[in-house]
Image 1 (cartoon, helix red, strand yellow):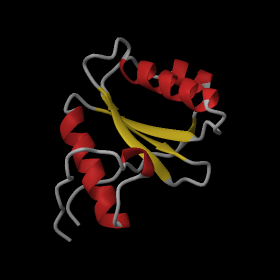
Image 2 (cartoon, rainbow, N blue to C red):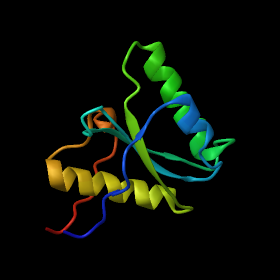
Image 3 (tube, rainbow, N blue to C red):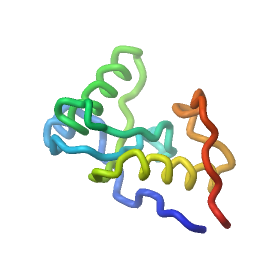
Image 4 (tube, helix red, strand yellow):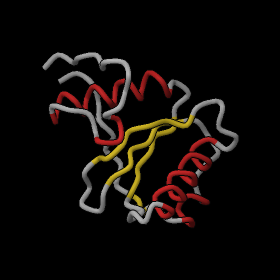
Length: 114
């Protein structure tokens, strides 16, 4: 299969873990405690503190909704939109569908060659 999934270990989504993140652009996956991917997203140029800002917002939203915080993993990249699309394509090719948090996507995802 063309394309490369994130292979970094999962990190618990906690305030301390988010505070330790670099204020840089990149992509990330949110996961349930069992390691299944629930959302693939990115921290773009409009985020004041990059990954730190978006993951702090993700943590706040999950806790505010009464959901378990879960886990995350990330990759630093200035090509965050291209990499985000690639991660979505890889996930869809492997699982036959997008993660639940990306199911409302308006545009179809490209296909990878198997």
